[in-house]
Length: 79
Image 1 (cartoon, rainbow, N blue to C red):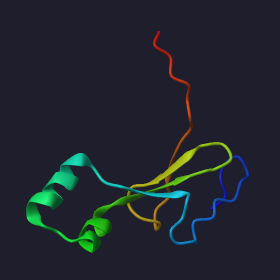
Image 2: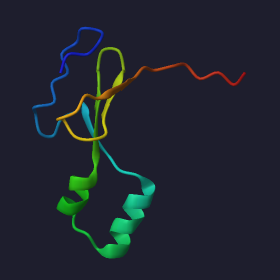
Image 3: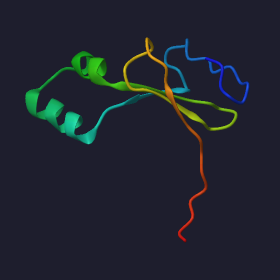
Image 4: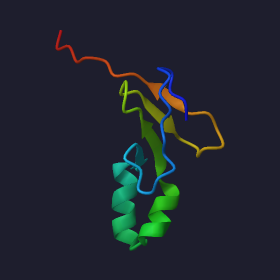
């Protein structure tokens, strides 16, 4: 996937150092309560890619068939 910064994010390698599997805490606890196996849990996870160049995060809420949302790193300010 081509990042806005121009870097090509390679997520074809398994495991990919740039791909994150994301699940809500609520879903995680529901999984533990139901005894769902790893593969069932993985089907419900969202996918996030991290650009190793600029740190942007590309969040796929509904799988790769829809366009992702992009989040840019922003320095924290306590003010």
